[in-house]
Amino acid sequence: MKSLKILIAFSLVLSLLAAGLCTSASALVIHENGFGFEVNSSKHTATLVSYDGDGGRVVLPEYFYGYPVTVIDKNAFSGNESITEVVFSNTNTTVEEYAFMNCTALETVYIPENVKSFGDRAFAGCTSLKTVTMLSDIVSMPTNMFSGCTSLCELTISESIAEFGYGCFNGCSSLTNLDFASNGVMLQSYAFNGTGAESVVLSDSLIAIPDYAFTNCSQLKYVTVPDSVVLIQPNAFDYENLTIRCYYDSYAYDFAGGKGVARELLDDITLGDANGDGVISISDVTTIQRHLAEFESLDGVRLLAANIESGNDVDISDATSLQMFLAEYETDYPVGAPITI
Image (cartoon, rainbow, N blue to C red; front, side, top):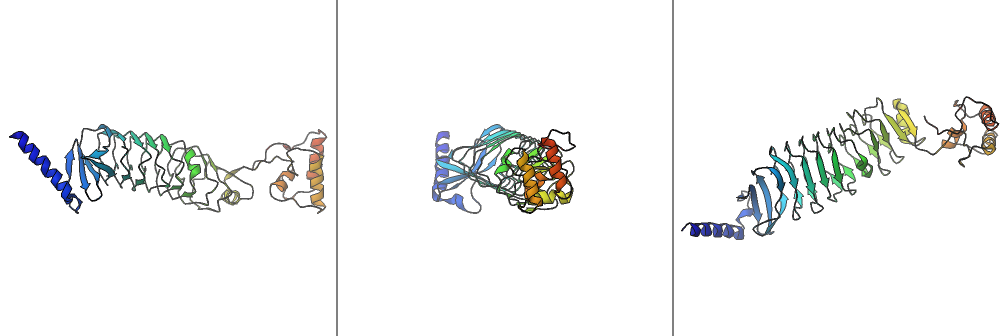
């Protein structure tokens, strides 16, 4: 008799699924092995909507009664304090907003390539999260994706990510390696606010650095800014103890000068190499003399290289100092050394 009741109950569930009753606004949630599911019979897919299992290492299911589990619903795991690891399955494609927010015991997440869509704050507030492997070839990192993940220190993400959304790594104070930031052709405010990196190299295709993109980064000492950047908003960085690595006469060069921020030149240039051939010789003296006689005009880094005595203008004393260096007389100027500003 008991077996008959189970068979009848199971048949009823299958009938409900087949009838498509689980697609309404108040969809039927069916629980199995600690997971709660909703089924969309017209699309032949299932959504994971809740979890009340034992925690620990959780492998997200591939199928529910033959229906591929494609979506991890909003708030499905939000606030869970028992799961420590999450492994996505091959059928999972979508992680809705807040899906794992404030899972304070979560330490490790593995996301394969098949997961193509993420909602805002999907992992925000996971304060114990240390390791994330995210192989998804998404283009944009969503708003506040890992905001507040203060323990995050090992991050593997796809090179396809070109936009770092608002606050996506905000407050990730243990994240010290931002090498992946060099792929970002677009940054939003607070994207890396409060991270722990000492050095950041930005993309050669980046155009603008918004306010608060790198503020509260107490360890940040060096930012390499390409000459593609034409806008740096005033509060993009905290400028104390910061050095901006940039090209001479670029937007970043002028911006750093206006802010009184230390600069290091990315140009391959040495003091005295006025003609730019990489060798300090009498030809450089001749180049300076021709410039002064207006037979040719030096500008940009070549003019900087010719300014031996670092005065306001290149004049005959610079040519004389260079001649003294070539004659091996002792000079007060670091001819032949890389130029720093």
